[in-house]
Length: 144
Image (cartoon, rainbow, N blue to C red; front, side, top):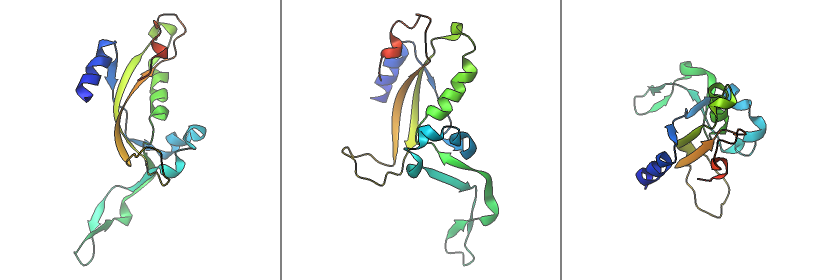
């Protein structure tokens, strides 16, 4: 199914892009208003290494391996995508940009939902740059 959808996106002129799964907390905080709804569903990476326990029967987080800055496991992609677009788009001549992203998304949802969803899911998302030049041929209004 993914292969068929991927081909359909490519047939409409989209390019695939991959954006980071781990986002520095300071970067993520720039979008505080946007992420408010996701804040309680975020996984946070605080350390970069495990070690054997003193008794040798298990493993534990190495307290000496604390990250300088915590990383958020991405619950959504908008924060990282729009920052990248800011670098890609320098003029109206750069528009439209047609991007398809296949990505793992992680959310720890603690409330009941109408539709069952797991903590980690694979999704496709077509993203369009804003286009006011009239060259988009209506693509800005298509939905994935």
